Structure formats: structure tokens, C-alpha cells
Length: 91
Figure 1 (cartoon, rainbow, N blue to C red):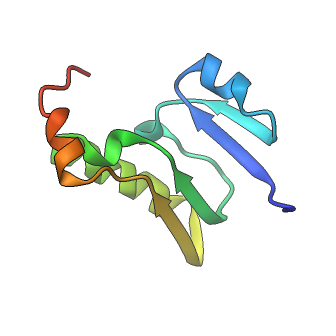
Figure 2 (figure 1 turned 180 degrees about the horizontal axis):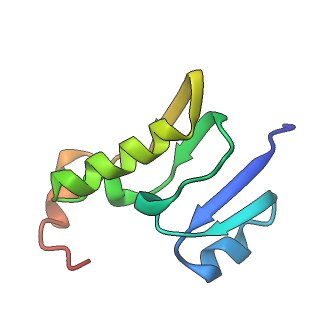
């Protein structure tokens, strides 16, 4: 579709699986600080369902910092029933 993909993950295995990425960054999302800004950020991560509000906030703050004006943020979010199953997460 012509998208230029920049992949970010804290897992080397996940980054290597992203075959279409032009650039790959090994990093926790909360500490990411790239010079580039994007039209779209896709956060395909269950972290938005993390039980700690500060973790969820850090995720959104990082995404916002990397978006251009009038850009879009797409989040993968689990519904309340599925999220409740993970209420005992150990991260």
C-alpha cells in the first residue's frame, strides 16, 4: 500500500518478524524518542490494557510525541471481559 513502516519493539524476535519495516528500533515504547514524526502510529500492543494508569499514559504520551499535527493514533484495545482475564498480569 506504499506505507513506509518504522517498527519499534523491545523484542529482537518481534522486530525480525517485521519484514516490511524500512527501519527497526529495539526499545521500550515508554522510553522511545525518535527525531521523526509520523502521520499514523499503530500501537498493536496489549499495553493499553495494562492495569497501571501510568503505564497506559506513558504509552499514549510517547505516541503523541511522535505524531504530526492532524495525525492518527490507532490502538489495539481488548474489551472489558478479555482485559479482566489479565487483571493478575505480572510484567
